Amino acid sequence: MKNMLKSVSYAMSMMLVAGYVSATPARASYENPSYHDASLRYTMDQEHKLALRYDVYAGGFKALNATLIMDLDKKAYDMGLKAETQGFIGSLFPWKASFNASGHAEKGVLIPTIYTERSTWRDSVKITEMNYGPSGKVLKSTTQDGAKTTVDRDIDESLANDTQDLLTGTLAMLQSVKNTQKCAGKFPVFDGKRRFNIALTDEGTETLAPSKYSSFEGEAIRCTLKVEPVAGFKPKDAKRGWMAVQNHTEERHKLPTLWLARMKDSGQMVPVRMEIASAYGSVVAHLSNGTDN
Image 1 (tube, rainbow, N blue to C red):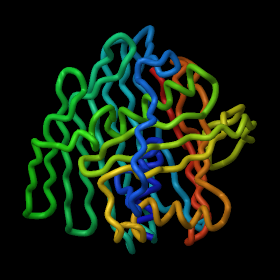
Image 2 (tube, rainbow, N blue to C red):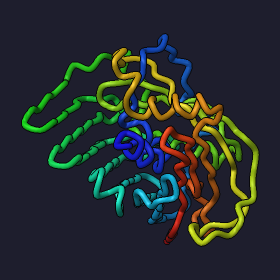
Image 3 (spheres, one colour):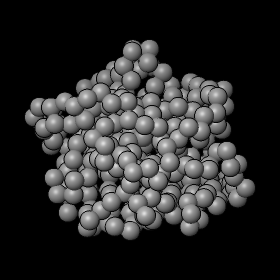
Image 4 (cartoon, rainbow, N blue to C red):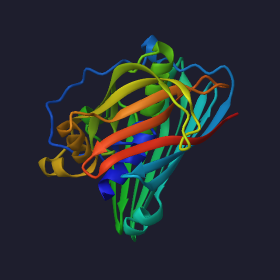
């Protein structure tokens, strides 16, 4: 349950899923999109700040809430995700986390400057920070796990080259769906230790009915989500984290499903619903409140 809740919170930022990705290593594949492709081009006519709240239910019980902040303008972006377990489930599995990324846009390409994530499980705290150069190259990765701090300045290029951090990659994916009106493609992410692709498959459009759980109703693009490990993984990781959850969904012949729709004022594409068929029962996340200024 703990790993499932961690993974769901990542998924809320559209793969905010993948920060705890773990799996048996796959054959390396670097057939990733060029961030100079027109379909990925970042364009923003004026500044918009979106504040989106999600409520997550597991087996019918409210399990977690998450808030996604997107501060976007023509030349820069800031994103933040906070998530925390709630209610009875929260008392059994006290976990919370925050993720933040800042960067700039150069000729329509998103280039991260700094990415940080902080997670707390009971009294255990883990912090990861990645610093980037002007061109988007990872310069340094710092991890603090309890009393142990690890600094890596000599990062394997096969892990980090031509990747983005989790939140910047999420924004690139949302931009691709906004530009093409399709949920498709593979997006490379490096989390400080591991490289993986987030693969999206288009499932058409669907009209979401009004609900007491959701603030959104109307047409949304439906897609399935799969994390593909590429490098930096260990065999023992196969039974933990997001990949364990993903394996459960594959056994049930139902990959995690995501619904995306446009915000009225900015036109920004955002997640409005997500569903995971896990070993613990159905996990459903709803956009419960959202502002777009």
